[in-house]
Length: 219
Image 1 (cartoon, rainbow, N blue to C red):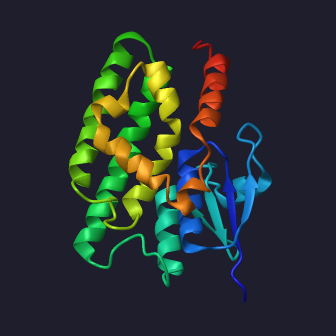
Image 2: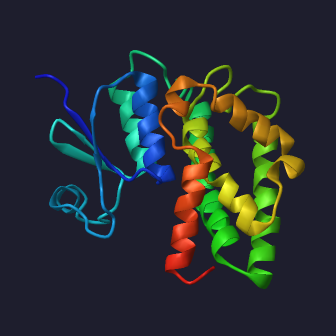
């Protein structure tokens, strides 16, 4: 039976971008189905009946939900090239820890930068910088979090860089000034073909953020 892979996704989702990058890095042919998040398809509701969210990877008729779980699944099933998680159990555990940190910290704090005002936004700015300084420490002198090549943490984190124009504009923050090593890492990642071809540019995402702000009366 030939492998059939389908990805249910939404173009601006940093979580969906993770799965797109992993599929591209592994060279996996798949069908991409763009979802309308305000009018979700019967297929999405069928394949992710619990959370009803994208992204959903469908492999030979079976659904894999939640982006980090899908990336790990891709790494394990298509394990003949470009490993994202190293074989050493301790190193794997550390990569999972930092990917989980990105989920719990970067997404929420980043959202507060462009959706909150006043004291809440000021607190988010401080927290955002502190979180990225911590990530810089973890990166150390490595080219990527995965070492010489992109790995699990790089795939988990780099999609949020596509939202940085909005974070910086609405949050009135200069990330490169505060965290130059982080931005240097992000720019290196954007030179990797599997990443650059899988994510939208910052201007397009910024336009999307402007529309969301208008819709919710934040402008």
